[in-house]
Image (cartoon, rainbow, N blue to C red; front, side, top):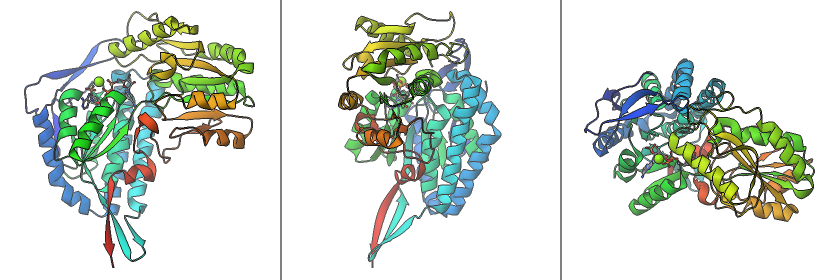
Length: 465
Ligand code: NAP
Ligand code: MG
């Protein structure tokens, strides 16, 4: 795999400032080292923030139509590298090739396109009575991203920031820095002015923390674990700077008694197995009425059979995540849940694989029903009636996503209105890259994607006449 031995700062690849060594990039499917990237320090972060600050006034003053043209060029530069990026995502994350092409690369290209359109069409000025309200860029953005959708998480922050007129310093996940380097190459080829986008690879507690703490950063946009999100929020709060947090989830797929059970179960299993369960919005809890419970469990056990590790299901990203997920499976057994498919044993002798696992007889208080597992594990819970289903669905600290299945769309919508969560798919509704994405409760602060995602990077100035 191609790896740059430097940071992308001020429009060029520059050597790391310090002497903090390198980060090994490992292929989680075969455990081979595929490359090294420099481990950045506070000095690299400082250089990148300075470059972003220097570039900010001119980029903020660039007409939105010209910013739109650069974002369109960025989309095209990503599309030109489609195969290379997909191969890199497969190599450093372990995503099966079809998933890498269609989702890991296809989705962010589409999202970049939506921001090229939005930058060109958005009203960055509005009239309110005797006032004109200007929507101005917040400034320098510090973006900290996770490994689960390496390119998408970057584009979902950088594209709206650029559309708004902000400049960016990105610290990508240590497990997936090669995809981030390809993004930087695309940003360079798109003709973004020097310093508008900058990349510092490095470790979270070193480079990530230095970025969140830097005085020259006006907004920190973070996606990842709730534990780290809480720290970032505290740092931003102390410095009175803007912060956006996309955190964990424990979403429920609620199958109401009138639903097409087979469809709901099959789509629900597919939703969790995709990306080896490493999706913050995955419906890891399946809620089924007691009269249809046994039928649902049998359907789920059957549905999961086609998700064969090493074929349709990739590995987890690293050994630590593999151990963490296996630990949760063991904990589920210890708590009295019943395994109907999968289990804690390792399915292949190489790679960080976990067996796709379905638990029945899960009760709402169990750890496997409360905590984000981030692996191919589904818990099926039994409910008595609709009120009980709602209590269970809303009974976690999270509120990122969910699904409702019912014979009648209006019935599903009535239930969805009462869910404490940021997005709900009705009877298998399709993902919409223009719809706001983000969490209620401890799933986060702020929204990404579409026009709502753009406004996160804007602040208002009112002129009175
Ligand atoms: P994480 O530690 O929260 O990582 C997310 C990003 O934050 C990475 O770039 C990480 O760098 C960085 N980071 C870590 N500590 C930091 C700090 N003190 N200050 C600033 N930045 C810091 O997540 P993880 O360890 O990769 O995964 C752990 C769990 O998080 C998963 O099991 C899952 O439950 C959850 N998760 C959620 C999402 C989501 O989309 N909501 C995505 C991934 C993971 P490093 O890469 O160097 O650690
Ligand atoms: Mg980490």
